[in-house]
Amino acid sequence: MTNLHDVRQAFGVLETSSGIQTAAMRLERGEASGPLRNEHPQSVQVLVVFEGSVEAQIGDRRFVMQAGDSAVVPKGAPHRFVGASDEPALTFNVYAPPAY
Image (cartoon, rainbow, N blue to C red):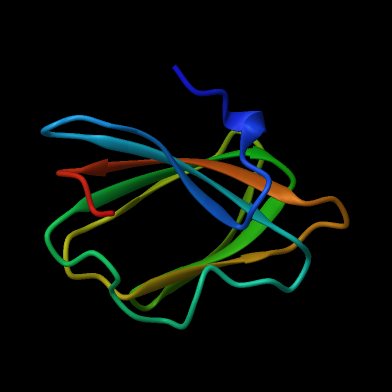
């Protein structure tokens, strides 16, 4: 067991099994998860915002996610997330199958 709040770096894997993986991401205002590209072409990602807000881009879609919002990143979709709140944004991510 790993607690989401224990992740202090920008990205950290929490748990991994043969078919699924969990991770946490912490983004300061303006900090991006990376460039707009596909970092895990074989995995679907589900992202849930737990604290703060993020600007999301998944393919051609752009939207702001607040605490409690979730989004699915399909396999092969270019995407990125950018911190959009004064406090750090904290997200919980699920990858199936594991991506990292």
